[in-house]
Length: 229
Image 1 (tube, rainbow, N blue to C red):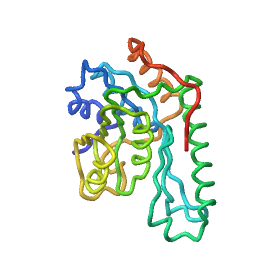
Image 2 (tube, one colour; image 1 turned 90 degrees about the vertical axis):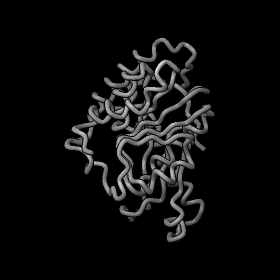
Image 3 (cartoon, helix red, strand yellow; image 1 turned 180 degrees about the vertical axis):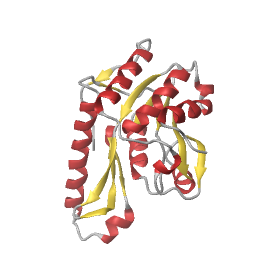
Image 4 (cartoon, helix red, strand yellow; image 1 turned 45 degrees about the vertical axis):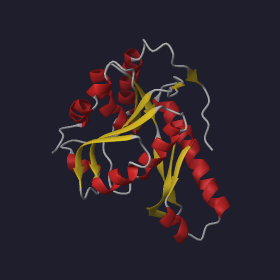
């Protein structure tokens, strides 16, 4: 299975989530790619869409070795193998993770265009990603950040994913949905005809449309501050 682009992937992914239509699910797109996929899902489910920012944390001086990942809402994941192999102290590791968390907060604020983040409620929360490659620690951090919001049911939805990661991620989410599990997926772009970076303005436009989709959800309360660790 291949996807033309993220919009195509989102429309097809929505078919796995139609049973949530009319039940007020809250959709969070992980990073810009997840927002592009998530917008099509939000349209199909008549649900609101929000950004949930996450990023990898690399070991300084070792760009090919990821220490772990951090995400909004205080989500973080440490790569045990990298921690064991580094000579860095616990305080240095904490400092690197904290610095990355601050960068995530700034990136999310910029992509939202000054709008406050809408927190996850107590119902069904869906994290939408554009794909999950092997060793994609960002997804773990994003799910953990959302879990800290105490949703009743946490769902992970992906158009394509490495099967080995899907099995591990079942420990992080209450439900894992994937259109196309792949045994070996080293890079998400291998499943797309077109997978380009999204300009900030395009992400902001999708989020603005997402705010229109969620305008009827009066119970959602915006918060100005983010809690990290």
